[in-house]
Image (tube, rainbow, N blue to C red):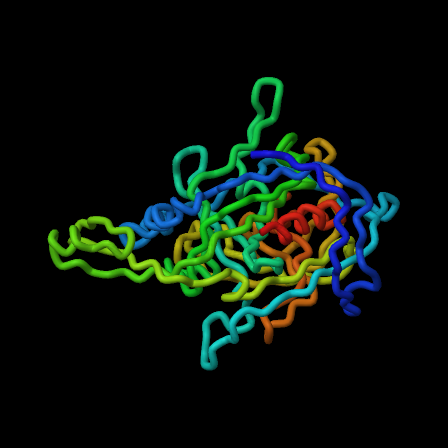
Length: 370
């Protein structure tokens, strides 16, 4: 893990009249934490085999990642003022054309799915991730605590990247409709990785080229020994091989959401995510992507290094990393990422960092990296 000091980044952001009237130019430089690799290229196949073994049992057994606890965010009064900065947007990008016909995911974004990783407790966990537009069409946005285990150490705060980090867009019921993408490099604000600052609890992860797993039933021990097309494992009932076909780049497959920052906090946003629980109990591997709308408001918890949060009340409790999209259009399944869930303040109120120019710099460093 290293930290780089970047000069101001002057990326060209397209003007979206619906949202903004200008192009953002972040005014200063600061440190960005870059972690590489989360999964090395040589270990992609074995990491994917870990998650898909035994019919995907580790995926089904994964539990929602724990969000920061004890956040008591209160609304910011008008006298408190809104964060400043020139408004800006980065346009979304489409993936392969949607297939015709009925779909359970109609008007839902293909860009959103589940992030899986092995936590510091050695157990599988999940968050929500979203494909966002990038130069190399390989970038996932999620909460910072869905990439790093953060805990105080003696005299210094430490952030350790999780192991076996993958992203599955469109995940539902154990399926991998558009492939599996192992994490490569993570980009985060150093105020989060150094101090656990909730205002900077976000990360952008570039991912390796995806794979489409195809299970192959192997009849006996001889076929198992001879299988060399990919990972293989034994089950209680026999032998299974995994052919890992190329899924190409993430953005080519599902597209990438745009990104908007320094917007006024007064317009409804679409919140997409996987619920933390259902009427039947805790969320499980069959829980599907859900949508709600809410009007955000500024909030803060000065006891928790959280001066610039955005809060929204929605119809479901979204898991960490769930995207908040401005100007979402269901026909295209695209909009502008303008928030993501990092935790809760009381029942039904989700919290996100305010998307400002510093977030844009972290994102811009990630989207330009090859």
